[in-house]
Amino acid sequence: IIWYITRIYNKGHINKNKSLKKNFLNWLYTLEQLKGSDSVVLTEDSVKIAAHFCLPYLASLGIQSLVKQGAKQGMPANKLLDALRGTDIMHWKQSLSELIEISLAQTTSIWRMYGKSTMARQQAQLLLNMNSLEPVNFSVQQNNTEAFAVALCHLAELHAEQGLYAVVSDIMKHLKQQFPPHTQHAKLWMLCDLKIQFEKAMNDGKYHLAEPHVTAISALNSTEGLYRKAQLLKALNQTSEASKILQQLQQQCEKSKNIEMTIRVMLASAELHWDSSGFATALPLLLQALSLSRQHNLQSLTSETLLHLAFTQLMLGIPEQALVLVQDVLESVLAHGSLIDKGRALLLAARCQMALAGAAAQEHRLTALEQAVHTLDEAVVYFSQLDCKERMRDIHYLQARLHHTLGNIAQRNKCSMLFRLLDQELPSSGMTVVSHL
Image (tube, rainbow, N blue to C red; front, side, top):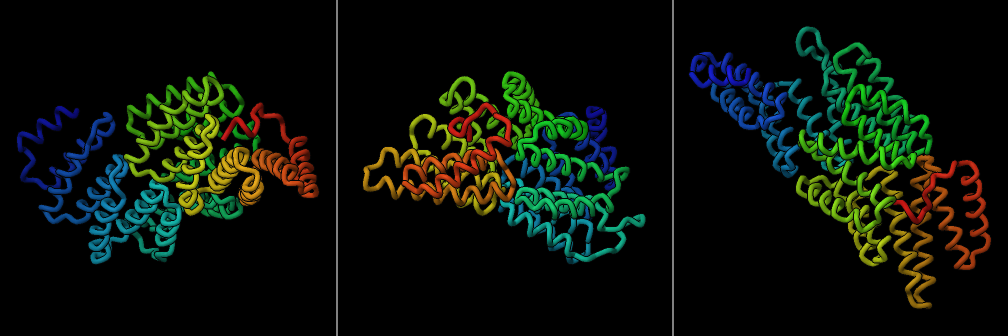
């Protein structure tokens, strides 16, 4: 089909018909995407033709498509946003409200992909506060468009990352009303809801509740489903099955050029190396993931990879370098990260401080241990907001050990009691606080 359309297009039979010429390019673009080929050149040709024949609506759609492809290829955020800003001026001048909504939703997705959650929330709120209910076409209301669904899903996930599940419930209730299950864009909120429920169950350590969500996610998105299945198997200590799935998933992602998922698979594979073949064997994977995340300007994944590297260095007996890495990313994680990321970063920083205190001179040792206690106090606040009991158990254990060393008997007994209560409530995971991030 691609050969046939290309032959007709190249022979010049449609050069006099600008609408047909545009449609041919769109067909080629769609078919090339289905084939898995790079369709940037076709999109650029489509934009040039639309601009030549003064078709601003089609030209803007083409530019938005190029921005999406550029984001996947790792173009800097400033170049992508400059391209969108140029088209936004025209949208506002000509009152192309549908394209304004698409642009705001796309900007939200770009900021989210690059790890800037604060900016993503701002753009989503701009879209939701447009207060425009003018019909677009065929009696379709603007608050029922895909752009609104995308923005609301982003907000739901961002609130879930901060442990605000009551707000998430309200957003989902609104999405279900605006986009009933049988409608075109219902798949967006269905997948979003399932991913949030899965992450909540995993954070709570309720793996039996997470398992049915994996099946449902796989029905909507096979890639996300495979990744979640590997996460669940890893948490259940079924490492060989998890490793097979991650290898299969990495091949799929490299073929489809899904860079974000490729990096996440590398991080999960590195965690499996920690448990099986040792910490040193995880370093090549982590360095490759770091190179990819920096190359594609994915700040959130870069921070997560650096935390994995810091933990590996800590386990290899290099706490000084590990603490330097943690401090380098801590500001970014606290500004844009989820609660679980903030807690994990602070917990890792405290463990590095403890390791350094053990080798410090006697006059500096107590000060270093007190600093570690303070860092753990900050970390437990984030985990308690998520009700992440496994992490809280780990922290109370470390707090009890530190207070015992410092001679704080009352605090030691309090932390010991909290640890004992959580340890009796939670099943044994097979991993101690010293063997996982």
